[in-house]
Length: 383
Image 1 (cartoon, rainbow, N blue to C red):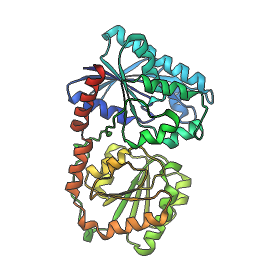
Image 2: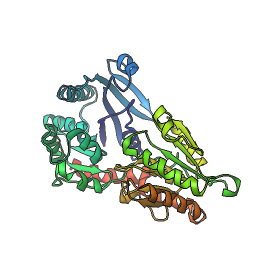
Image 3: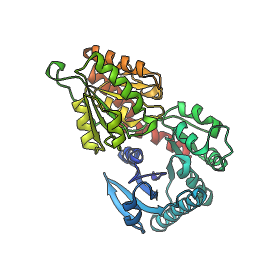
Image 4: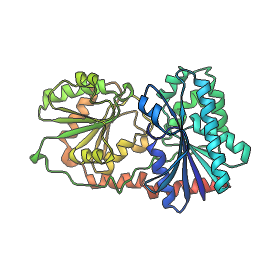
Protein backbone atom coordinates (compact mmCIF):
# COMPACT_ATOMS: atom_id res chain seq x y z
CA UNK A 1 0.00 0.00 0.00
CA UNK A 2 1.23 3.51 -0.79
CA UNK A 3 0.65 5.72 2.26
CA UNK A 4 1.16 9.47 2.63
CA UNK A 5 1.74 10.69 6.18
CA UNK A 6 0.70 14.28 6.89
CA UNK A 7 1.69 15.58 10.35
CA UNK A 8 0.13 18.70 11.85
CA UNK A 9 3.55 19.61 13.21
CA UNK A 10 7.02 18.25 12.59
CA UNK A 11 10.69 19.22 12.79
CA UNK A 12 11.77 21.60 14.28
CA UNK A 13 8.69 21.40 16.53
CA UNK A 14 8.56 17.70 17.38
CA UNK A 15 6.27 15.22 15.64
CA UNK A 16 8.50 12.20 16.24
CA UNK A 17 5.42 10.01 16.63
CA UNK A 18 4.70 10.49 12.91
CA UNK A 19 8.18 9.31 11.96
CA UNK A 20 7.96 6.28 14.26
CA UNK A 21 4.61 5.21 12.79
CA UNK A 22 5.96 5.72 9.27
CA UNK A 23 8.90 3.44 10.08
CA UNK A 24 6.56 0.82 11.57
CA UNK A 25 4.41 0.85 8.42
CA UNK A 26 7.44 0.64 6.17
CA UNK A 27 8.57 -2.47 8.08
CA UNK A 28 5.25 -4.04 7.08
CA UNK A 29 6.14 -3.60 3.41
CA UNK A 30 4.27 -0.37 2.67
CA UNK A 31 5.60 2.53 0.64
CA UNK A 32 5.52 5.47 3.04
CA UNK A 33 6.35 9.14 2.54
CA UNK A 34 5.92 12.09 4.92
CA UNK A 35 4.55 15.37 3.56
CA UNK A 36 5.44 17.97 6.18
CA UNK A 37 4.30 21.59 5.98
CA UNK A 38 5.40 23.32 9.18
CA UNK A 39 4.09 26.66 10.37
CA UNK A 40 7.04 28.52 11.84
CA UNK A 41 6.48 30.84 14.78
CA UNK A 42 8.72 33.85 15.15
CA UNK A 43 8.28 33.60 18.92
CA UNK A 44 9.65 30.03 18.96
CA UNK A 45 12.84 30.75 17.06
CA UNK A 46 13.80 33.77 15.02
CA UNK A 47 16.72 31.98 13.35
CA UNK A 48 14.50 29.17 12.01
CA UNK A 49 11.87 31.69 10.92
CA UNK A 50 14.42 33.62 8.87
CA UNK A 51 16.73 30.90 7.55
CA UNK A 52 14.79 27.69 6.88
CA UNK A 53 14.14 27.01 3.15
CA UNK A 54 11.31 28.59 1.20
CA UNK A 55 11.22 25.77 -1.36
CA UNK A 56 10.53 22.05 -1.01
CA UNK A 57 13.35 20.13 0.64
CA UNK A 58 13.61 16.35 0.29
CA UNK A 59 15.52 14.28 2.82
CA UNK A 60 15.77 10.82 4.34
CA UNK A 61 15.15 10.39 8.04
CA UNK A 62 15.85 6.93 9.41
CA UNK A 63 14.94 5.42 6.04
CA UNK A 64 11.77 7.47 5.48
CA UNK A 65 11.55 10.04 2.68
CA UNK A 66 10.40 13.43 3.99
CA UNK A 67 9.16 16.27 1.82
CA UNK A 68 9.13 19.47 3.80
CA UNK A 69 8.07 23.07 3.30
CA UNK A 70 7.60 25.91 5.76
CA UNK A 71 4.97 28.58 6.30
CA UNK A 72 5.98 31.79 8.03
CA UNK A 73 3.09 32.21 10.44
CA UNK A 74 1.72 35.66 11.19
CA UNK A 75 1.35 36.19 14.96
CA UNK A 76 -2.27 36.23 16.18
CA UNK A 77 -3.76 35.96 12.66
CA UNK A 78 -5.12 32.45 13.12
CA UNK A 79 -7.57 32.22 10.21
CA UNK A 80 -4.96 33.40 7.72
CA UNK A 81 -2.40 30.95 9.10
CA UNK A 82 -4.82 28.02 8.93
CA UNK A 83 -5.97 28.81 5.39
CA UNK A 84 -2.43 29.18 4.10
CA UNK A 85 -1.20 26.11 5.95
CA UNK A 86 -3.93 23.95 4.40
CA UNK A 87 -3.22 25.49 1.00
CA UNK A 88 0.46 24.63 1.43
CA UNK A 89 -0.34 20.99 2.22
CA UNK A 90 -2.57 20.75 -0.85
CA UNK A 91 0.18 22.25 -2.99
CA UNK A 92 2.67 19.68 -1.66
CA UNK A 93 0.18 16.90 -2.36
CA UNK A 94 -0.39 18.08 -5.94
CA UNK A 95 3.37 18.14 -6.54
CA UNK A 96 3.65 14.59 -5.21
CA UNK A 97 0.78 13.36 -7.40
CA UNK A 98 2.35 14.97 -10.47
CA UNK A 99 5.49 12.91 -9.93
CA UNK A 100 4.22 9.63 -8.48
CA UNK A 101 0.47 9.40 -8.98
CA UNK A 102 -2.15 8.91 -6.29
CA UNK A 103 -1.51 7.25 -2.93
CA UNK A 104 -3.82 4.54 -1.65
CA UNK A 105 -4.39 6.25 1.69
CA UNK A 106 -3.67 9.49 3.54
CA UNK A 107 -2.70 9.19 7.19
CA UNK A 108 -3.08 12.50 9.05
CA UNK A 109 -1.63 13.08 12.50
CA UNK A 110 -3.99 15.27 14.56
CA UNK A 111 -7.22 16.57 13.11
CA UNK A 112 -6.06 20.16 13.73
CA UNK A 113 -5.08 20.80 10.89
CA UNK A 114 -3.67 17.80 9.06
CA UNK A 115 -6.98 15.96 9.34
CA UNK A 116 -8.82 18.91 7.85
CA UNK A 117 -6.31 19.18 4.98
CA UNK A 118 -6.68 15.44 4.37
CA UNK A 119 -10.47 15.87 4.18
CA UNK A 120 -10.14 18.56 1.51
CA UNK A 121 -7.74 16.40 -0.51
CA UNK A 122 -10.04 13.40 -0.12
CA UNK A 123 -13.03 15.34 -1.41
CA UNK A 124 -11.13 16.45 -4.50
CA UNK A 125 -9.48 13.14 -5.38
CA UNK A 126 -11.58 10.46 -3.67
CA UNK A 127 -8.66 9.12 -1.62
CA UNK A 128 -9.64 7.77 1.82
CA UNK A 129 -8.01 9.24 4.90
CA UNK A 130 -7.55 8.25 8.52
CA UNK A 131 -6.65 10.48 11.45
CA UNK A 132 -4.42 9.46 14.33
CA UNK A 133 -5.24 11.80 17.20
CA UNK A 134 -2.63 12.91 19.73
CA UNK A 135 -3.89 16.26 21.10
CA UNK A 136 -5.05 16.42 24.71
CA UNK A 137 -8.16 18.06 26.14
CA UNK A 138 -6.03 20.68 27.90
CA UNK A 139 -4.34 21.71 24.65
CA UNK A 140 -7.75 22.09 22.96
CA UNK A 141 -9.14 24.07 25.88
CA UNK A 142 -6.21 26.47 25.72
CA UNK A 143 -7.05 27.22 22.08
CA UNK A 144 -10.84 26.99 21.93
CA UNK A 145 -11.77 28.05 25.45
CA UNK A 146 -13.78 25.95 27.92
CA UNK A 147 -16.51 23.73 26.47
CA UNK A 148 -19.13 24.34 25.27
CA UNK A 149 -17.27 26.57 22.85
CA UNK A 150 -18.38 28.55 19.82
CA UNK A 151 -14.86 28.67 18.36
CA UNK A 152 -14.97 28.93 14.57
CA UNK A 153 -12.51 26.05 14.18
CA UNK A 154 -14.72 23.39 15.76
CA UNK A 155 -17.31 22.86 12.97
CA UNK A 156 -14.44 22.38 10.51
CA UNK A 157 -12.69 19.85 12.72
CA UNK A 158 -15.90 17.94 13.46
CA UNK A 159 -16.49 17.75 9.73
CA UNK A 160 -13.03 16.23 9.25
CA UNK A 161 -13.65 13.67 12.00
CA UNK A 162 -16.92 12.54 10.43
CA UNK A 163 -15.41 12.36 6.95
CA UNK A 164 -12.53 10.14 8.00
CA UNK A 165 -12.62 6.45 7.18
CA UNK A 166 -11.36 5.97 10.73
CA UNK A 167 -10.13 8.05 13.67
CA UNK A 168 -7.36 6.40 15.69
CA UNK A 169 -6.87 7.94 19.14
CA UNK A 170 -3.64 6.75 20.76
CA UNK A 171 -5.64 6.20 23.95
CA UNK A 172 -9.32 5.29 24.20
CA UNK A 173 -9.91 7.88 26.93
CA UNK A 174 -9.27 10.64 24.40
CA UNK A 175 -12.65 10.04 22.74
CA UNK A 176 -14.58 10.77 25.94
CA UNK A 177 -12.22 13.58 26.96
CA UNK A 178 -12.68 15.53 23.73
CA UNK A 179 -16.36 14.72 23.09
CA UNK A 180 -17.24 18.14 24.51
CA UNK A 181 -15.64 19.63 21.39
CA UNK A 182 -15.88 16.95 18.70
CA UNK A 183 -18.72 14.70 19.80
CA UNK A 184 -18.12 10.95 19.76
CA UNK A 185 -20.35 9.78 16.89
CA UNK A 186 -17.54 8.99 14.46
CA UNK A 187 -15.74 5.78 13.54
CA UNK A 188 -12.79 5.16 15.86
CA UNK A 189 -10.46 2.51 17.23
CA UNK A 190 -7.61 3.09 19.64
CA UNK A 191 -4.03 2.08 18.76
CA UNK A 192 -0.98 2.83 20.88
CA UNK A 193 1.85 5.09 19.83
CA UNK A 194 4.97 3.34 18.59
CA UNK A 195 8.17 3.12 20.59
CA UNK A 196 11.41 1.86 19.08
CA UNK A 197 11.77 -1.06 21.46
CA UNK A 198 15.00 -2.19 19.80
CA UNK A 199 16.61 1.17 20.43
CA UNK A 200 15.14 1.51 23.93
CA UNK A 201 16.01 -2.08 24.76
CA UNK A 202 16.13 -3.63 28.20
CA UNK A 203 19.29 -3.20 30.21
CA UNK A 204 19.86 -4.32 33.79
CA UNK A 205 20.77 -1.63 36.32
CA UNK A 206 23.58 -1.56 38.82
CA UNK A 207 22.58 -2.82 42.27
CA UNK A 208 21.35 -0.15 44.65
CA UNK A 209 24.22 -0.97 46.96
CA UNK A 210 26.57 0.55 44.37
CA UNK A 211 24.88 3.96 43.99
CA UNK A 212 22.03 6.20 45.12
CA UNK A 213 18.49 5.62 43.87
CA UNK A 214 17.91 7.95 40.93
CA UNK A 215 14.60 9.13 39.50
CA UNK A 216 14.51 10.77 36.09
CA UNK A 217 11.87 13.09 34.68
CA UNK A 218 11.82 13.77 30.94
CA UNK A 219 9.44 16.51 29.76
CA UNK A 220 9.54 20.05 28.44
CA UNK A 221 9.32 22.72 31.11
CA UNK A 222 5.62 23.54 30.82
CA UNK A 223 2.71 24.02 33.23
CA UNK A 224 1.00 20.91 31.86
CA UNK A 225 3.95 18.77 32.95
CA UNK A 226 3.45 19.59 36.65
CA UNK A 227 7.02 20.49 37.56
CA UNK A 228 5.78 22.65 40.45
CA UNK A 229 4.14 19.55 41.93
CA UNK A 230 7.32 17.53 41.45
CA UNK A 231 9.40 20.19 43.22
CA UNK A 232 7.13 20.06 46.27
CA UNK A 233 7.06 16.26 46.21
CA UNK A 234 10.82 15.91 45.94
CA UNK A 235 11.35 18.16 48.96
CA UNK A 236 9.23 15.66 50.94
CA UNK A 237 11.16 12.72 49.48
CA UNK A 238 14.50 14.27 50.43
CA UNK A 239 13.25 14.99 53.95
CA UNK A 240 12.87 11.24 54.47
CA UNK A 241 15.59 9.96 52.14
CA UNK A 242 18.31 12.57 51.53
CA UNK A 243 20.28 10.05 49.46
CA UNK A 244 17.70 9.93 46.62
CA UNK A 245 18.56 11.79 43.41
CA UNK A 246 16.47 13.38 40.64
CA UNK A 247 17.67 14.10 37.10
CA UNK A 248 15.46 16.28 34.90
CA UNK A 249 15.74 16.58 31.10
CA UNK A 250 13.68 18.42 28.51
CA UNK A 251 13.47 21.72 26.70
CA UNK A 252 13.57 24.58 29.18
CA UNK A 253 14.46 22.48 32.21
CA UNK A 254 17.77 24.31 32.55
CA UNK A 255 16.11 27.75 32.40
CA UNK A 256 16.42 30.36 35.12
CA UNK A 257 12.87 29.74 36.36
CA UNK A 258 13.46 25.97 36.50
CA UNK A 259 16.71 26.46 38.40
CA UNK A 260 14.89 28.65 40.90
CA UNK A 261 12.10 26.09 41.37
CA UNK A 262 14.54 23.21 41.91
CA UNK A 263 17.08 25.09 44.01
CA UNK A 264 17.63 22.11 46.31
CA UNK A 265 20.18 19.38 46.85
CA UNK A 266 19.93 16.15 44.90
CA UNK A 267 18.55 17.64 41.66
CA UNK A 268 20.40 17.80 38.35
CA UNK A 269 18.84 19.94 35.59
CA UNK A 270 20.02 18.74 32.19
CA UNK A 271 18.04 20.83 29.70
CA UNK A 272 17.36 19.54 26.21
CA UNK A 273 18.89 16.14 25.43
CA UNK A 274 18.90 14.26 22.14
CA UNK A 275 17.57 10.74 21.71
CA UNK A 276 20.85 9.03 22.58
CA UNK A 277 21.29 11.08 25.74
CA UNK A 278 17.73 10.36 26.85
CA UNK A 279 18.33 6.62 26.47
CA UNK A 280 21.54 7.00 28.46
CA UNK A 281 19.57 8.82 31.16
CA UNK A 282 17.08 5.94 31.37
CA UNK A 283 19.93 3.47 31.79
CA UNK A 284 21.42 5.60 34.58
CA UNK A 285 18.06 5.78 36.40
CA UNK A 286 16.04 3.39 38.52
CA UNK A 287 12.59 4.87 37.80
CA UNK A 288 10.80 7.57 35.81
CA UNK A 289 8.55 10.12 37.49
CA UNK A 290 6.04 12.08 35.40
CA UNK A 291 3.83 14.52 37.37
CA UNK A 292 1.79 15.74 34.38
CA UNK A 293 -1.56 17.50 34.62
CA UNK A 294 -2.51 16.55 31.06
CA UNK A 295 -1.32 13.83 28.70
CA UNK A 296 -2.74 11.66 25.93
CA UNK A 297 -0.23 8.82 25.76
CA UNK A 298 3.23 10.10 26.65
CA UNK A 299 5.99 8.45 24.64
CA UNK A 300 8.47 8.92 27.45
CA UNK A 301 6.55 6.45 29.61
CA UNK A 302 6.75 3.79 26.90
CA UNK A 303 10.43 4.52 26.25
CA UNK A 304 11.35 4.30 29.93
CA UNK A 305 9.42 1.06 30.50
CA UNK A 306 10.95 -0.40 27.34
CA UNK A 307 14.36 -0.05 29.00
CA UNK A 308 13.04 -1.89 32.05
CA UNK A 309 12.34 0.78 34.69
CA UNK A 310 9.09 1.39 36.58
CA UNK A 311 7.12 4.62 36.39
CA UNK A 312 5.48 6.92 38.93
CA UNK A 313 2.87 9.02 37.13
CA UNK A 314 -0.52 10.67 37.47
CA UNK A 315 -4.01 9.77 36.34
CA UNK A 316 -3.31 11.73 33.15
CA UNK A 317 -1.53 8.61 31.88
CA UNK A 318 -4.02 6.40 29.98
CA UNK A 319 -5.02 2.88 30.96
CA UNK A 320 -3.13 1.26 28.08
CA UNK A 321 0.17 2.53 29.55
CA UNK A 322 -0.53 1.40 33.10
CA UNK A 323 1.24 -1.92 32.80
CA UNK A 324 0.88 -4.41 35.63
CA UNK A 325 3.87 -4.38 37.94
CA UNK A 326 5.30 -1.29 36.27
CA UNK A 327 3.25 1.80 37.16
CA UNK A 328 2.27 3.66 40.31
CA UNK A 329 -0.54 6.12 39.59
CA UNK A 330 -1.55 9.08 41.77
CA UNK A 331 -3.95 11.99 41.39
CA UNK A 332 -2.83 15.09 39.52
CA UNK A 333 -1.75 18.13 41.55
CA UNK A 334 -1.15 16.02 44.67
CA UNK A 335 2.44 16.47 45.83
CA UNK A 336 1.90 14.39 48.99
CA UNK A 337 0.64 11.39 47.01
CA UNK A 338 3.43 11.76 44.46
CA UNK A 339 6.09 11.84 47.17
CA UNK A 340 4.60 8.78 48.87
CA UNK A 341 4.51 6.84 45.58
CA UNK A 342 8.14 7.75 44.89
CA UNK A 343 9.20 6.56 48.34
CA UNK A 344 7.24 3.32 47.93
CA UNK A 345 8.89 2.71 44.57
CA UNK A 346 12.29 3.03 46.24
CA UNK A 347 11.28 0.78 49.15
CA UNK A 348 9.97 -1.98 46.87
CA UNK A 349 12.42 -1.54 44.01
CA UNK A 350 13.78 -5.08 44.26
CA UNK A 351 10.28 -6.44 43.58
CA UNK A 352 10.13 -4.90 40.10
CA UNK A 353 10.97 -7.22 37.20
CA UNK A 354 12.62 -5.02 34.60
CA UNK A 355 12.66 -7.68 31.90
CA UNK A 356 8.93 -8.32 32.37
CA UNK A 357 8.23 -4.57 32.15
CA UNK A 358 10.18 -4.40 28.89
CA UNK A 359 8.32 -7.44 27.48
CA UNK A 360 4.92 -5.91 28.26
CA UNK A 361 5.94 -2.66 26.60
CA UNK A 362 7.05 -4.51 23.48
CA UNK A 363 3.71 -6.33 23.34
CA UNK A 364 1.87 -2.99 23.47
CA UNK A 365 3.94 -0.60 21.41
CA UNK A 366 6.72 -2.24 19.39
CA UNK A 367 6.96 -1.30 15.69
CA UNK A 368 5.87 -4.78 14.63
CA UNK A 369 2.82 -4.86 16.91
CA UNK A 370 1.61 -1.36 16.01
CA UNK A 371 2.56 -1.71 12.34
CA UNK A 372 0.50 -4.89 11.95
CA UNK A 373 -2.50 -3.35 13.70
CA UNK A 374 -2.38 -0.22 11.55
CA UNK A 375 -2.02 -2.36 8.42
CA UNK A 376 -5.25 -4.20 9.29
CA UNK A 377 -7.13 -0.97 9.96
CA UNK A 378 -5.78 0.78 6.86
CA UNK A 379 -6.81 -2.15 4.67
CA UNK A 380 -10.36 -1.84 6.03
CA UNK A 381 -10.30 1.94 5.53
CA UNK A 382 -9.12 1.57 1.95
CA UNK A 383 -12.00 -0.82 1.28
